[in-house]
Amino acid sequence: MKFSARSLFANALTGHKNWPEQFPDKEPEKQYDVIIVGAGGHGLGAAYYLAKKYGIRNVAVIEKGWLGGGNTGRNTTVIRSNYLYDESAAIYDHSVDLWDGLSQELNYNTMFSKRGVLMLAHNIHDVQSFQRHIHANRLNGVDNQWLSREDCKAFLPILDISERPHYPVLGGALQMRAGTARHDSVAWGYARAASQIGVDIIQNCAVTGIRRSKDGAVTGVETEKGFIKANKIAVSAAGHSAVVMAMAGLRFPLESYPLQALVSEPVKPVMPCVVMSNAVHAYISQSDKGELVIGAGTDQYTSYSQRGALHILEHTLMSICELFPIFKRMRMLRSWAGIVDVTPDRSPILGKTPIEGLYVNCGWGTGGFKATPGAADLLAYTIAHDEPHKINAPFNLDRFTGGRLIDEAAAAAVAH
Image 1 (cartoon, rainbow, N blue to C red):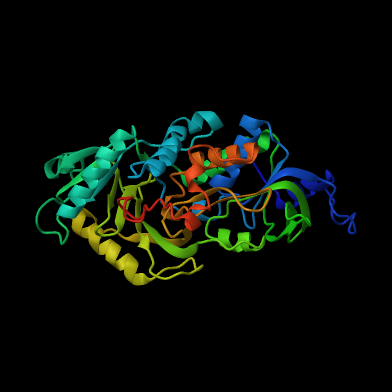
Image 2: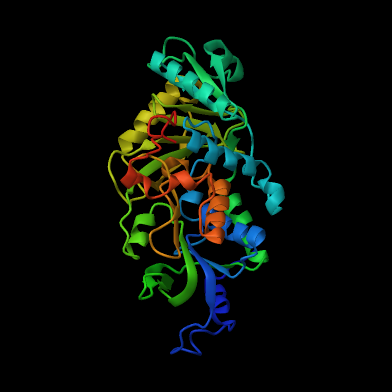
């Protein structure tokens, strides 16, 4: 599978490989039914579902870099649905259900592994909060169970449950349907499947503006390579959604923060699950290549930089080494940061905008990867029907003016 930005753009717009050199004064005659801005997992997935489920194949996905090169390629692959509120549990569990059969759906191995996510409790507040989560999850049909300190040790032998750590382990909440997947494979799988059924993927083509008609409806996007017409436009550009929406004259309640992660040198399998800790703002799993994948909390300041504060990683590594003394001599292989969009209630915005023909999928914060197939499916539904599905209807833009917030800032158990 090879995607050429130049040839895809030329063929998509005119069907001629030499455009625009041969026709320098012509605007492209091609008009798409839908343009999706952002070729990450969400954008590519939405294009796939539009074509596969709703027969809308005259679709272009436009990406300023390369497909899957944004947050999709920088996340730490955790998948779970053990959120507190009904709305959040529904949207994330819908996604977990889709993850379960995604490799078969796309005929591409996404390496989804239901190894379980264990959330550690370090104080009485954690214990009470997690047990509340467990009861709320069960009411919503989401699997979750409480483990005592001894149960945590039996499930994860390398965990230190003594009184030595600064944050001693008192127990944990375990969701066994949760786990990890291969981030790159998800983007590649959606890209290949969408391309095979007629979707155009245009890389290295930054969007510079959104054109609107006199009555306010969208008519297409301005790009570095020219104007592209479209009946509908969906923006799914993690970390930069507010910038793109401003091109249409909309101000969004989003702030962007660096979110850091790192991986170690590879070792033999030692971590049977994903471990998360709210008190220490750290989580850890092991990739199929043997690397320890470690993530931290978001930085305290807004930024578009793909670097973060060093003290955040230092605190995270100190905490990981307290919980797992076996890792103290491990060497770090590389570190990086992604940029996450955060809303005032730490829940996403997924639906229509006040502008006719303009749709948005943003504000997932640290929950974007786990929501990939669900968000893509629901965005496609919303575009195809010009109205939201009942699952994503609560995640509209109007909630910030009406005060009906879905405040998962503390209820998500951890910041990821």
